[in-house]
Length: 316
Image 1: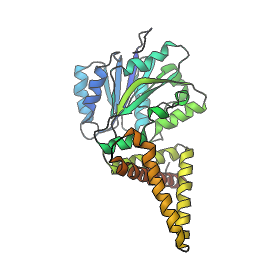
Image 2: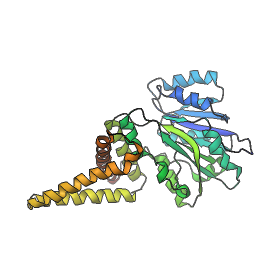
Image 3: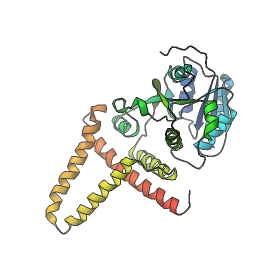
Image 4: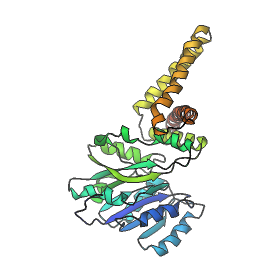
């Protein structure tokens, strides 16, 4: 548990869209915090499932909750929420996340140091089945892969001083998919030092099936290109598949190449199991991990190409 020298007044900021099934769990987790938020501002992007109406009912029993309906993407919603905030510390989490009881206390503790401007909290998956357990290492940074000196903040679990926010210009309202990653990359390029708070934990609910997962991976890839970001691992991924395509077509003439090509495919699928099996430890992972690997690969490549095509045609 963090040692708190100061009573921090916090503005907790969240955007939602069609979260009627999950919003009560989120509010319940926020109300249970060991350090209560001073205010909770939730902006609804125009839900059609009764989310905003549900927030209105929840606000009657919890005066710190201030819901607003603001049509637009998450960037628009978050920027609006900040404009309505009244306190010096801004804390972010997302719909679909469940903060642990000490999350808020842990994420604001580093601000006891007056030099701290931005804090990166952490997260863990909340799987309900083996598929979701296999999906988690493809989406979240697992504990043994964390670099505390360079852990980019995510709006799943992030805090900053409002005085710092006022210098940033906020989230880019043109970005629809992974605006928080683009924002974090921009801060890193500006030389901002992030303080990592590993015990500031929120639980994240993984996508439920392969179709939802594919769309998530593709959306992230499109968002990267929209933000002008091409991650190094995506470059290697594209080169990997281009090399495979080259040798596959070459094998149409030199049939003996089918054998080493098939071996390489098997080794690649085996690699997908080896690198992530320790996070799952279930025999079904031998099926799901390669399946998710290939789905993620194809979705990222397709999303990247779609992003470049959309950019070339002036769609964003």
